[in-house]
Image (cartoon, rainbow, N blue to C red; front, top):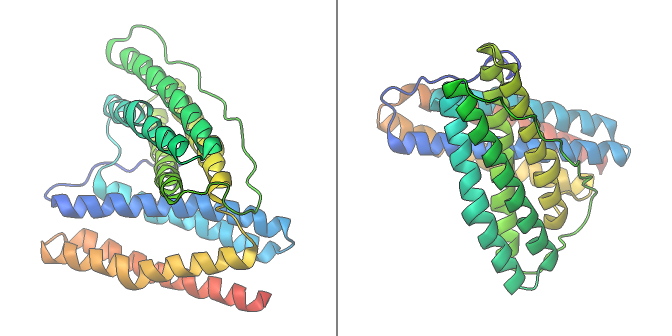
Length: 293
């Protein structure tokens, strides 16, 4: 499938069952998280003097985003009109601003993870600003009144290798949930940007792209630091191998069987093909790990 720079993932979901669509959403979260994680792992491999591993992580990251996630997004009908995309974005940002991040901050504070509580509170405020910008953009798109706001600029966070900086299991779980959400928001907003630009609204495309950058390079990255997501290159490879093998042997075959059982053949084929790709990724990562030993 063409990359996000060429085509958005438009609706083709006629007749798919609710569980099938739920499985596609799970797949998109996983693929978006893999893209974001592998991008950081590639940077760390370069930093540690393993350029071949860096290239492997970077190329695999692109496959996860530009093939696997985009194919799932096409099947799931993730991208609609500019107005519907904005409404979806507003709903997501509102939930994160009003509910999710405030809840995570309260729990982290209660558990003594004050750095996480501070970060969650800051991100909640950012998501409120994103929601407000999208609301203004929606008015401009649907009524012609006003203008699309200028895009935000990410305060890029560097993510060095390191151990988790939180102590509570609940905080670690919330960080994982948050990272998956931020990775998916980045991927979806980049798809929305393609649709906006193709429909002749470059200002809206820039707003989506700028917000996507904040979600990935500021929010996801800040959470990754606290979570200790990036470790040594050997550990990162081992983590990637485990994830890819799970997707290849358990997760995607299970999704494929479930989709096939209810007659969603196109989705079943997607899951089978993606499982085969993930098996190849696991093999490539294992080879790279063996060469480092």
